[in-house]
Amino acid sequence: MHPYLEKNLDLCKTTAAENNTLITWRVYADDFIAEASRKLSSLNSLWPEKLDRYTHCIMNPPYKKISSASRHRAYLRSAGIETVNMYSAFVALAIALLEEGGYLVAIIPRSFCNGPYYRPFREFILKHAAIRRIHLFGSRNKAFKEDKVLQENIIVALEKGARQEDVTVSTSSDDTFSDTAISDYPFGEIVRENDKELFIHIPTKPEADFLNVAQAFGYTLSDIGIQVSTGPVVDFRLKEYLKAMPEPGTVPLLYPCHFKGQFMQWPIEGGKKPNAILCSKDTQKWLYPNGFYTVVRRFPSKEERRRIVASVVDPAVFSNAESIGLENHLNVFHNNKEPLSEALAKGLAVFLNSTTIDDNFRRFSGHTQVNATDLKLIKYPSRNTLIELGKWADKQGELTQDMIDKKLERIAE
Image (tube, rainbow, N blue to C red; front, side, top):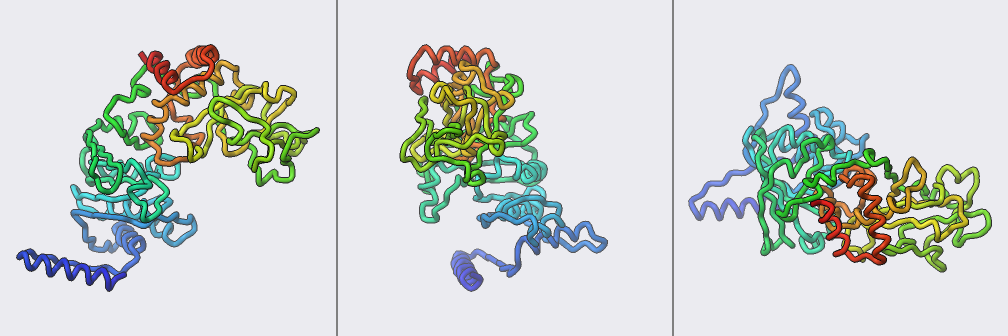
């Protein structure tokens, strides 16, 4: 790449000279992570190296996971940086190399905004720099269609050592920026004051997020006596116990394909997924008692516009079964691995299927995957409110999105 880069820079230099402007440049033929880490770690040695610092950095770093046993991980640790991907390593090193008051602008995946693996990186950013602006592309398919990018990317502007103030958030459908919308938000809406995980929320519209301001939605799952876990049945590990259709000695096995909106379809004849699992001493620890549970797909289907899609396990569909299996692609709400009451399970599903929940989730997650950890971080109505919501839903028959959203707005008032 170096000859092409130097040729390009020569053209810039020639063009600048024609306009009586002087440009000088240097190309460093080094491994950036190795060389930057070495320079930074030398600052703590007896003979610290003179460090050239920068006022500005514009970056489109590589995206690749870093193995915990790799040389790059060792380089980063020597510089006091703990992170799991090349892009976050490049950003952290660049921040460390900036002057106080220097600016960094980077186009990077949104994945660092949430999740436990990137928490040290979020801590590093928020400790050493202020977030000045975030730009979010509304469609990952349009903005980077030529590069087949499968995740949401953002452009972030950081100022090293600056006092954190309001954050400017802009959005556009694609990389033409023709429909860019810009709003300013208090930093407390970007990183919640008491959030130990330091999740970075990216509001996409200036309307108030009533889920975070309404007193009615101030409860954790622990407050209301509910837990959420990933479905315990990992099918490829229990392959010898799986059956295409129910037969004597088996219990129902539920996959995301068994849930169609508010309804269940089980068994599915001729489907790609098994419908049953043998009930034995070898599988018993992976099974739950039959009953009502709320489930959320970990990977919404391509047809779904929503990120969070909740359904209810109805024990009446398989009333003779004592136990059921819940496959690993489902998140399951339960009461210490026991069923929920019918009204609570239905109320929880209605709440999770509201538009405000989907909008709230998109503020801090650029993933299509929905993890149990994400669901634990949502604020919920009280247990009694959820039960009343479930009873209300039971009386309505089939619910529309508009009915759900209006009901949630009334609860928030």
